[in-house]
Length: 287
Image 1 (cartoon, rainbow, N blue to C red):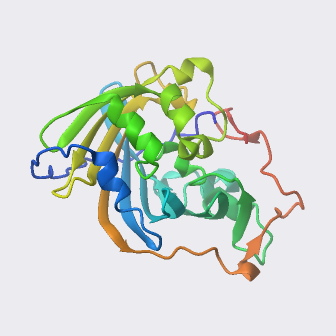
Image 2 (image 1 turned 45 degrees about the vertical axis):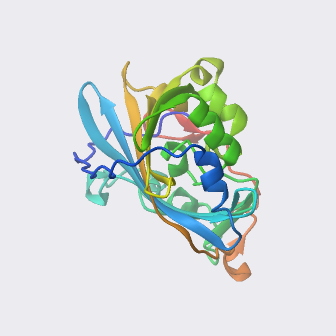
């Protein structure tokens, strides 16, 4: 998907997160995580996406979410995201689609079926419905494109990530290409509407993973060029996604929304997102 409209001023923000206490890195973090993968349990997370352009750092996106586990990995997710812009910063004469895009959106995903509500999707639904059902839908709506691209609950993804890094005291650091992640991660493939071009797949993602005292992920920070997502920011513009995990193994029960609140069709009667939704900067949103 091409660059979302970001011509309006974004609020400056500084994210200060205390480092986790240093712990010895476990011999097999993947096996440690696998022990947590019990049905009806899960983990909560918080994302903060920071865009850096010409030395300026702006908080671009906030997300909160919950993953529910299955024996093999991920059973369901519930994520709410919002671009960091105030309603007062949006021009009064801006299209309704743009105004809606900067309001919170929520995505419940059960298996590979997504239920989308709020944000841009609020302008597409029939008046009596609040959720759009999409089989094989996106993991987090539009904001999901800019969320954490690495899903550690996917065992193959976690294993691939660790192979690209080096262990330290309670932390791993490394780098990996988007192509390597895209190949192994169903989550990443579902999060990005358009398949990245060959050049984007060569983009390098650097990362640092901190573990808690039990050897489970506590914080993951990834940094990569925005061009990897199809954005066209100034040369050298990067996105840093800082994710913190809490409550590993807590009881979780994510369900699909009530059937009477869900529509499988848009208000125009179609069942697919339209291609080429125009944005003020001349780019488009396409499926």
